[in-house]
Image (cartoon, rainbow, N blue to C red):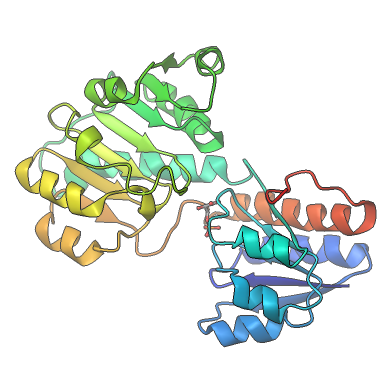
Length: 306
Ligand code: 3PG
């Protein structure tokens, strides 16, 4: 039984060692494909794999066609928009994620980017503080909940909107649950995005919502670039020189944002939210255990293509 770890952005070594330990103790073999740049390398490595652990690596129909023995793919992380679920199902492959395992890492980076933004990107001018400011969390999943917890430590007033999470769950976390998303954008100087990229959410964050934000607001994205309507956001930021946008996922028009809004825009060169050894260990080991549970016991907890 061969388990391939295919990560163009590798895990920390300590996480790979932990994955190897779990896989080898189960009597399976571990293969490692790290930092690959060509898809052909992925296709070649996947050809004899029974199971795969991936991150944001794109697993499309071509990969499923090439991986004739594949039974399970575990996305070590939350978002699985990089996996073609229909093709997986058609090929009889189980797809799982590891929800929550890297959520704290992403949430901490949100505050790293936020402090950087409100302190004017450390340019020496007088900035502002987060204490007492209102933060709106758009989607209250695992990352959103961690953002709420940390925001309270900063003394922020925390709001959340989630179309799929009951209000009482949000309120039980000590967070104001808002009835409609517009109200949250109207109220909060900081909006933190935690939406998955789906047909419903793609391009949904644009003029209609962001234009409602109060003066001197910050939009922070640690989710997916596809949820932002970039054309509308650029136009809006051109009209409103008080708006800042910080993101852990480079927009498609990253160069344009950087050129037009040098003092109001920041993007990490590579998605860094989950790039901590702790998150790598949490998500990587969970992925390895889920593979062993699936192969040995048929456990399908966390399967996302039912
Ligand atoms: C996720 O969906 O879990 C995060 O976006 C992390 O992605 P990464 O594993 O590519 O860093």
